[in-house]
Amino acid sequence: MPGIQGLTINSLTVHHRRIALVRPFVTAVRSATAIDVVLVQARDSDGRSGWGEAPTSWRVTGESRQSVTAAVEGPLTEAVLGAPVDDPAGTSALLARSLVRNSAARMAVDCALYDLAAQAAGIPLYRYLGADHGTVRTDMTLSAGLRGENEDGLIATAIEHRDAGFGTLKVKVGAGGDDVSVLRRVRTEVGAGIGLRVDANQGWTAEQAVSVISAWEDAGLGIEMVEQPVAMDDLDALEFVTRHVNTPILADEAVWTTRDLTEVIRRHAADLVNIKLAKTGGLREALRMAELARHNDVAVIIGCMMESHVGISAAASLACALEATGAATRSTAHDLDAGLWLKQSPVTGGAAYERDVVRLPAAAGLGISGLAAD
Ligand SMILES: [Mg+2]
Image (cartoon, rainbow, N blue to C red; front, top):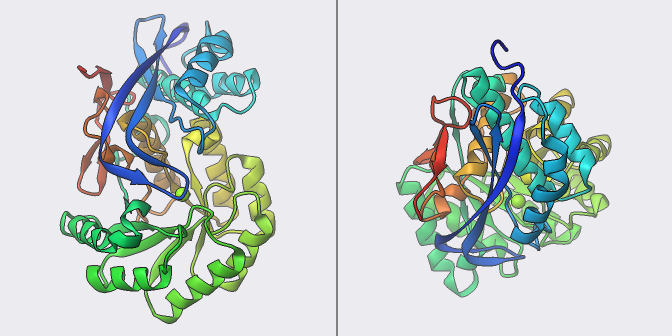
């Protein structure tokens, strides 16, 4: 890349914003009304800033604002200081060697490095990664908190999003209650034209999963895919479900890294994989995993944690790139709705939503110009 040789990484700074959600987010393992957004700003020797986000949740990523701050200010800063801006993959490999786990902290720094590299090259990150367009479609998640006594609330939210132009809805299941009848009702109410996928977040045994999914199949509900039906560390169960139903099975919590994906592929334990930057530790490893998946005919969905527009900007850039290489299918919605749950973005610029489309700016890098006013 002309003109960017000699640029180096000068500093990493952690920023924190607490941002309220538009409605409570409830899954089988957590419930939240606001999130702690933890951002990393990387500065290069030309004074440019690159941005990344570390989604934190003790129960999902095993990290916190404090643990991310300690990792970024300690070993991750040590690993990147003075590193060349034009080699984000090489520097990201140093991050991975500088500490074990802490993948959300590594994601934040890795994404900030890629943002800087694309800025220095003068092109949007999605182009830097090989894409020719900056838009992807996302699903909309219907929270498990709308279940149980409040099934009418789930239906109302489903209809609201269908009417607002969302083509794919993701229903959280597996938290108790009658999942067969709930999905039957959702399908009846939203009609046949809407994509319906479900996420059990490890909530079933293998036998329960096969029983519920088979009942949906018998009822002709047209469920697009079922995400992580069983416990993350039980590949026997995941393989059993994949073998015994026709509906595609999507591995999420079971696959964090290339090593996990290799084992899922070897056993054909799932049909698709949900790649999230907070699991992979950033874009470098995510790109490796997507390439492995593509070579083995495993379809890829790009997903997100409960995170802001900063993390979503990097994930959407990746999704665009994978659609360009064929690792992800243009007709399949990704799982990048987290920004829609926040009352405001913590930054100016970056990804914006238009109904179910995530649109990336044409500006260089992630197109983030700085922190938004509090
Ligand atoms: Mg999931």
